[in-house]
Length: 120
Image 1: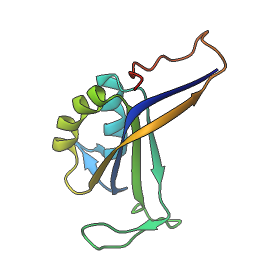
Image 2: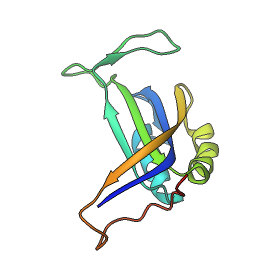
Image 3: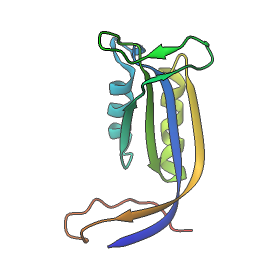
């Protein structure tokens, strides 16, 4: 089954060592996404990068300083629910938002997760 619809993509960039209430920030954000009912979230660990601090972060064998990117795709309304939480959780980082055209493939409607994302 193939579906196409418009949605909003949010990407949060920060460092692997960043924390929220003693927990790794990426884990805290994923938990918050689930709590507020986001369709899904994916965390990517980068090899190397830098941001506003201009400090280069590396993913090396013993390093816990890799760049992290968390990606979320959902409706405009759902993304808007998450932003106030991110405002308090992310101390240093970058959030990028964009409108996206989504193509979702699934094995059929039986048991498939339903996105409540309006088409068009």
